Length: 130
Image (cartoon, rainbow, N blue to C red; front, side, top):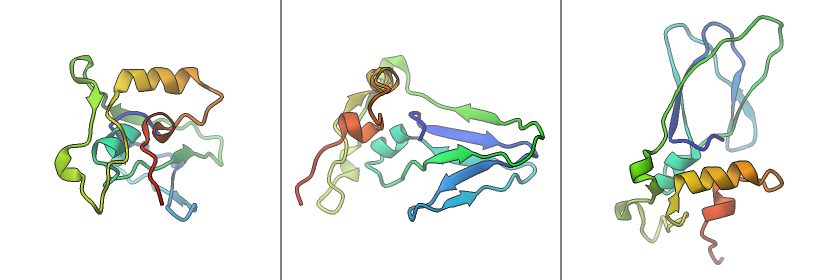
């Protein structure tokens, strides 16, 4: 999973992108001309209190053809870098999943602690009883 908000990807004629489904199966994403694939990042999932999920994804190549991808991505501004789910996305059926966190602090934790799994829940997840 990516640590950002959103990725907009164009595979440019050579396929290889796969997304993991909720059952653990890897789904091939076709490279359709003139289209983009949009993948949400962990930060967007945290902001939406996981109403929208951030998928695990990978690139697998089965041939020797060069693969080019064009990826547009987004990050929080340094001036507004605290990620917090809006109150209207939290209720009894959707309890708060993540504590508010500083995005750049999260990046620092994630990429300096290589021995930890390093996903967002590791650092800022709220443990629930039950």
